[in-house]
Length: 559
Ligand code: XMP
Image (cartoon, rainbow, N blue to C red; front, side, top):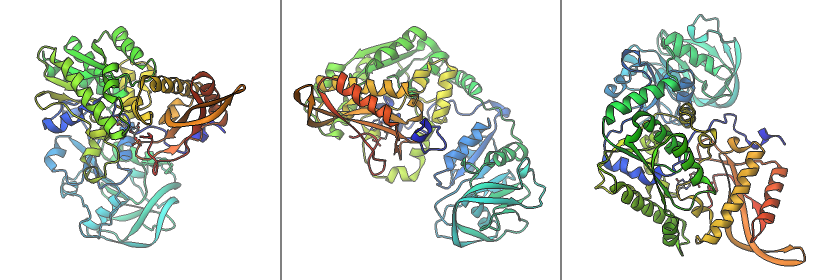
């Protein structure tokens, strides 16, 4: 088995969902309560130079991927709901629209359609899958349910056409399809520019409006990026001036301008988002930022010391460090229910944070590591109606009397972009590439009540997992890898003696966004080393098991 065998994700870049909510989880509600517009880095360059491609989102699971691919071309791209008013779009200086896919069918009642400005502003438009059908439907063509659905690979054959969309594009190439409906009649003026065996209209175009029946944003469409590149540069005439360095410079200016001489606080824990946001703000306003680090005692071994060392020694940040281990452990004493654990920790965190914040002179802003997937998730209608599985996002919130304005400079960045910002700011790789770690920390990896003794066992086992995963060079390929201390004991034998010890479980998963996850096919010898080290080095543990369940139906964490 090779390292590659452990992941079945062709795109190993992580897209953060709820994974790395970390400390800001507890402060999350503040944003909803305050109703204030947060300060964010937002777009790349100021004034007339600013250029944006807008992805009109009809709810496809690939919509965010389109935005990511376009940003990889150094063109700023935002994903906005299909019913976004023109005033909001106009502020972004759009250079073109991409219409996303959707699970809907255009001919159904209530199917989402494009607003009239998409056609009336004479900007270039690229419809993808459902997006193409929307164009056909709205401009007078006919879309019908196909007799054959087309999922997976297909071969695209480009006709004898002279279109900038096909610059450097081969006459035949593999593309990835996922559709049931098809275009029966093209709108007036449109031509079919390419076909596949099952789709006579696999690409259509008229002037600067194009449609693709396939998905250029997924890696299986080999020349998908070429099409996006041609659209963005040759058809929309973008310059490609959005870079991480540029983003950092603009954000620094913006933060300085908006904060002025006032004071900002942030919460840090060593998680990627809160670390990057604090470092960015510190770079902008230095001493005016105070970071509060509440050590709940539920962090991994050495995590608190390492985090403090980076921020204090490398960046000379103003940090208030509170070792609240005893306080948290006494609050958790006797609590076995996972949701009660989460709520107890959330409430205590806010209390400690508030106590420390109130010792400071006037503070006006709270910095948060909100990232783009959080924004997309909370904007989507499904987020509001989805069933609560675990209370990650509603465990507390700042008390309403703390009327702080929010600064969220990472609000429009995907996780991998946040990591690049971290590297650009000089944060150590170890911190930038840290796997997501839940706010309630090790408490939700101890089944049953949390005690000092159990925490020590789990920290030791977890340390071994981490060391071996890193040694095998697997750390970055895994979304998360960790140990769980179960509430089971089992019989074992050590030397000539019978033992009755704890059962430790190992969990390692691959994922793009934590919404779904697959158990990682870790090499047997890595598992063997982890198991043998744990039973030999961690007193009280005599058995190790590996969790081979995916999400769904399991969740990533055990509690
Ligand atoms: P589940 O266990 O729901 O986890 O599959 C999905 C992702 O969320 C993380 N997680 C949490 N993060 N507070 C957090 O900040 C929480 O209470 C919490 N519970 C789970 C989990 O580690 C995974 O990345």
